[in-house]
Image (cartoon, rainbow, N blue to C red; front, side, top):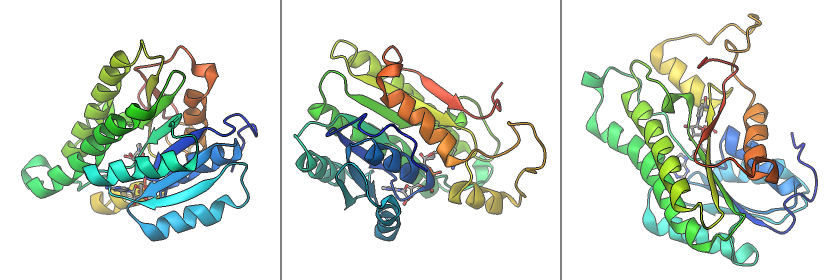
Length: 255
Ligand SMILES: NC(=O)c1ccc[n+]([C@@H]2O[C@H](COP(=O)([O-])OP(=O)(O)OC[C@H]3O[C@@H](n4cnc5c(N)ncnc54)[C@H](O)[C@@H]3O)[C@@H](O)[C@H]2O)c1
């Protein structure tokens, strides 16, 4: 679903990490439809191809790049690839790749699983901002994908919860560092989204999904399009006075 006004980001270069996933795919489609040159980044080549195929004809130029966001050299290479798509400047960065890790009480969490979640969700977000900001100028925007898990705890998800709290801390700090440069650093904090990640967590926890027949918005999962719309708002000039904070998109779950 692409509802962005065509031409809004004409000729501007954007990077989307986790572009093979449900949220990255939806945001990439909107950026491309709005005329941006979009580099689709993911560690999974097949998922990237699926996203590319789903875009069809777009106003902007689109390319794929296989990279692991937790590896410094991979981040440098995706930034180089994005710079080659357009003028060399990066205007929009959706710093979004993330993993859920293992659902278990802390005494049953393996240190390897904790380290992997922190590597992707924290180191990856850190490295992305560190490299991309070198090629951003006034008016550029970064949106980091946080979560309602960045604002409150949840039993049996210590690594993921810790990682998303860190994403909020990074967003706040880096936004302060870039206020005078006129670069906004925001976060989006979705509640559960319809897709692979919630299916994985539900399987691990032996849960069935919430009942969609219940009408309360906080009970249902969001459609990725509902979160992508918030991300596009943060990228837009309509959000010109928003930086250093997270936009929660959870149907009222945190309320
Ligand atoms: N799905 C939800 O319910 C939900 C809720 C709140 C926040 N989030 C966050 O939204 C973001 C996107 O998640 P999603 O729902 O699209 O999940 P998803 O699993 O559909 O997509 C995540 C994508 O990231 C990629 N990826 C994972 N590790 C990577 C790495 N090291 N390098 C490069 N790519 C990597 C995966 O291959 C996948 O394509 C994540 O940061 C996630 O934590 C998701």
